[in-house]
Image (tube, rainbow, N blue to C red; front, side, top):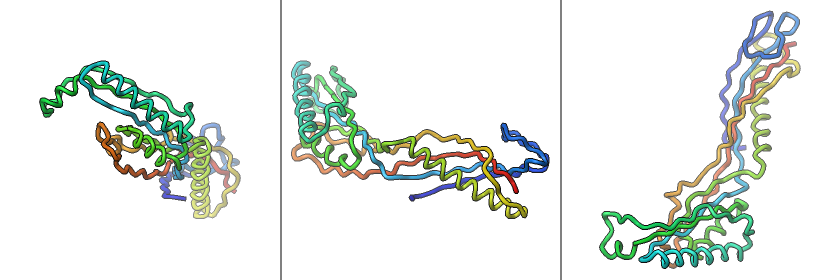
Length: 242
């Protein structure tokens, strides 16, 4: 199933000992219980990729810079749509056009040619298995900035449920081991609650995925490595003692 990590803390509640976090559970001699808190995580293959890519350029004039960016953007989007990416899954994220403050290290020629800069980026949602193909198509069409890639699952709730079940199973095992050492047996589950942390998505660092601006032909070979998606769950459970 992938790497697991379990950090477990437990305490015994029985024979009239009070417990602050037993919540609604009544603890007395007629209701002997063991309460445990278990943490576990699960990892699965990514099913969805959220890619943010775009085009950045400089120009001598406001109009020329803008026109070049729009022309490049049209070519990139047309290539993506032509490859089968639905337009509804391509969303404009940024669109900027501004005068440039020259960098100290720029040459006099660069300063003259970089009076203005324009940038446009899109957010594309697609199956993780298609991420490499779509990035390759976009780069060949002129995209020169790959800003980020988020790897996700198609059903986050199902992943949360899987983590909850795994943590609860860990908790039952711990409770059974404790009961055995005390000469007792675990009965039915009488109470459970969870504190599921937010989903943890893996993101490709934008710097490691950036291409030169503008992208020289032929485009560089950018290799993507889909990451695992991890979900952690914390479960508090109370079991009856037999």
